[in-house]
Length: 394
Image 1 (cartoon, rainbow, N blue to C red):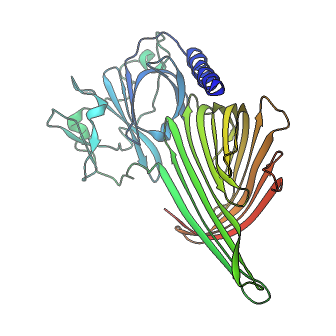
Image 2: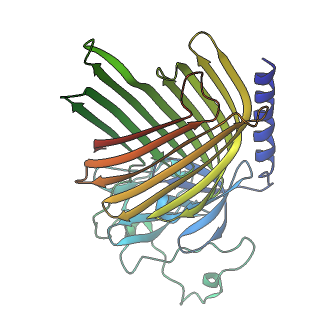
Image 3: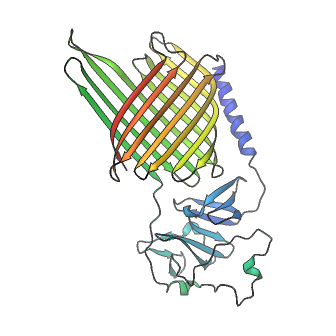
């Protein structure tokens, strides 16, 4: 009980100190509507060609990619970011009174509807109305303001925008994806055995946060020729849930929850709860690498009522490399160690290759390795599993 009390106190202090470091006093007036439907209120701070810094109401600053934005409300303008096959284009419209971008949505006819008005306008601009998106520093005149009125780009009224030729618009992107994989091996002859596994994964990559979930069920039996009885050689289940909150494009905080059951190791269940901070060192479309660390609370219950629980640290690193458009290599390693007993530590690692045959069907091979420096009595320290799967992606 004392360990649990210290764990929750340390967790509360950790998040309090981390959040406090981002507190900044500011006045907020801008609104951002993301392609996933989330609306942010705050202040645009800095802007470049692909992203801009945004200060939220709680004082924290985040970096937002322009490709993840649908609408921007700044001052007396509504800025529409059009996502077409040719790329991004910008349309500026005067902002009607008493209108929030929270109330703006697409219709089935791919037109933009401004509530409480009788005006409908297309979301895209042609070459004459397309303008460069500029966010001048607060209090500093922009180049556009310094230009003579005759040289400034012409403004577009809502009535004129309604007459712009309608073009094809790509609907808002889906932020989540998942997969379900399965495999079976059956051997007959001198040795009879059957191995079955099912695994699944889910990822929801949003503008402000990420949600991940994965699970694995592995079962294997070997038939004893002498007794004609099936003997279990593998019976384990694993599941991991994770939440990441993005403070910037690279810095994030997280909470990770891991569960495991293994009959062969006589493990009724193992739970590892870990908050912490992570950083995306490489965040490119084809290559991603991140590392994270934080405190961890481990609770293990073995057959016979034996319980082991301890506070410690958890360090993890993850790599995703899209070698080709249809082939992805991935690897991970997670290290957990007790703070009380330095010899009590474990490493969970894995690496695999996934090949997409079609948009929905894929083949994968994965090697999983678990090393427990203090295993249960009679169990081996290291447990390796090689699995091949046919999967369905959605």
